[in-house]
Length: 366
Image (tube, rainbow, N blue to C red; front, side, top):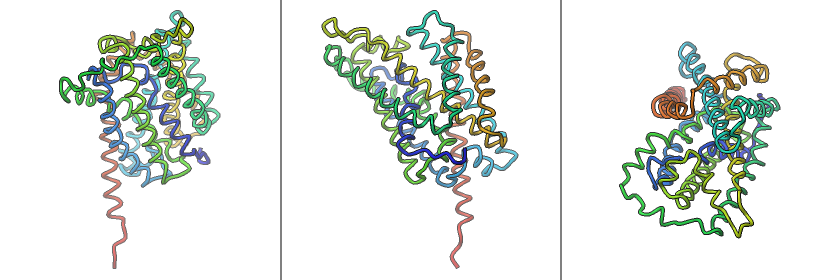
């Protein structure tokens, strides 16, 4: 793992696909109603502020993953349990995304395929790529980022040509003021998907350019936020606020509105492709973060723990909840109560400790 170096362009694509993940196909930010697209952009600003803390820690310890400088700053007896908790967090997030993806895939098209089979196939694909190395995952992201962009461009042009877009459905903007928008940001958008970038603190030591790396990742976060905001605005302008709010996968009925002279129809498969790509990369990044943490903390070879960790993720995803509704309710609680501790509070404490440590260790003049 120590010889791995990932280029800034590859990291940008990996960041974009990670941020899009499942967020691209769900009704993200609909707590703000038709202003969901605004709440996503505000959530991105909050996420970028949080990311500056991750970038600061990376610049202080460019050769260490999060679990390593956690122990350095908090000490062995506090830092080690905290590092273990982060590994558990990454495994849990990988399992939850795997459950999200397999359930959505079953809802969208593979109605009779058992969730276990869908989950096992997606996880096996991720494990195979990671067995080849994290750098292979990052190189693969370049190809699939291009695929997602082309699908998005095609879908937007087809919706325009079919006359399905009605921008009046986005009006009036901020009808109920900023309060619902800010409430949506606080309950969801700054943590999902932007706060989840904490897992990249495990992969950033493998950046080939320490100086440009954080800027490239920040650009990836901003670019993905623009895409997510545009997609939600597109969904609302095609379907209307009520339908988007009720639909678990609003991008699917949005794309199904494409119909040009009975020639181009039934292009729902493109949404399924985007869903599979997004889930694969998001799950794989969390998976990789957990493996890097295990390897660094317990001094074990990266590949030795790959398949045991994959089994843990698979069975955790299956035992996560009895139904998709229960799974979403559980996720909402974690998003609002548990995840801020790991994605905001602990990194903030580490930033303060790193700044204090740097201040007192700096050479004094004279």
